[in-house]
Structures are given as structure tokens and as C-alpha cells.
Length: 76
Image: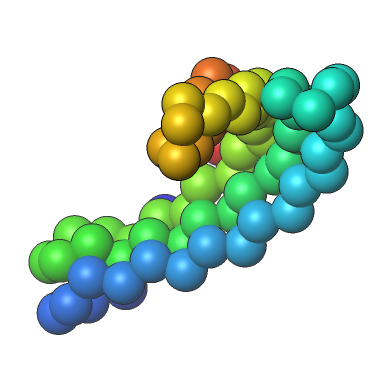
């Protein structure tokens, strides 16, 4: 944690990810996020975490749906 106390909330995100299509409907994604968080009247902090996503695309008539299962791990 840093000693900075802010007067307004801000959050900065850096994402990196790679994905692989298993078929026309399903794909898997691996990624990493670094998050700089500056909450209202609290100490600033950073999060680093890898994550995995499984996406499944379906359609029902003109409607399209994306189902997502995600796993995040807090790394410190």
C-alpha cells in the first residue's frame, strides 16, 4: 500500500490475454490484470492477478448470448 490518500475514486487497469477457439461456440482465455486502485478517502493499493475464462456463444433466433465462467486469483 502507498501512503497517498485521494479525494476522488480512480482505477487504472492493464489487461493482457490470449484466447483459443475450441470450436465455433467455445473458447478458453488466459490472462493477467494489474489494477491500480485509488478509493475515496482510503489508502491506494494495487492488485495483480492471473485469470482464466471459458466462453460459450449461443444464438436463439436473432438473440445472441455469451456465457462466461471465470476464475480470478489474487496474487498480491
